[in-house]
Image (cartoon, rainbow, N blue to C red; front, side):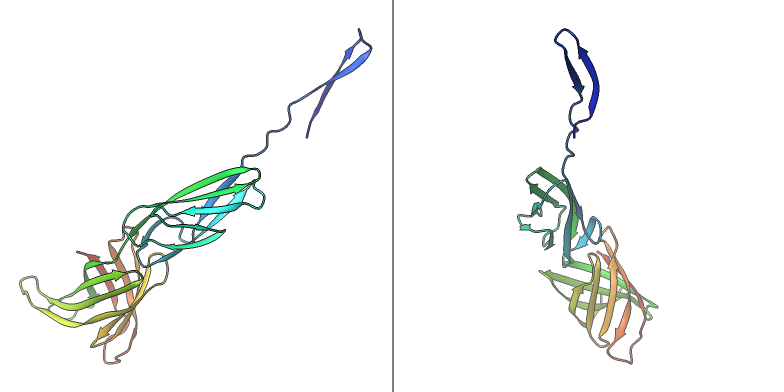
Length: 218
């Protein structure tokens, strides 16, 4: 829209000329990335959903790059980060009015490795657990052993890990198969170095229920 300014008399030709201001500059298109967990740290078995909020573009097309060689298109996309690292997730919105881009960083770590855990209250003279976990895609497996005092080299096998699933970007639920078959639900801290939670179900009712757990990377 043009805004009309004051008219000036041009007496020497008998005409009136009106001065006008420059038209308003069009707003620049923008795009913003939205995730359920904001941005930050995620476990390697978590599937993240990304969305985009676009302004200033008519019927935009959205192209995504996840920083690990994978790509996708659409207003809402999902992705799982297999490898450890800090990939940059970028979305490019294209419309008739122009192009807009946005980028966020996501830090991902797999769960493969040795985790030392405690259960409160801890059984007498146990330290309590050593857990060797292996992540392959969205499948998490592992062997669980009791660990005695630091001066005692004994390790007592007590079962394996089955049915591990991601419940949120840093949430995890798994079943410890063995003497008690505990079902554990916990959340990994933002540093991705520890998991805290509780036993939410015991499939062998002779075992304790409602225990508080902490798992730490070794």
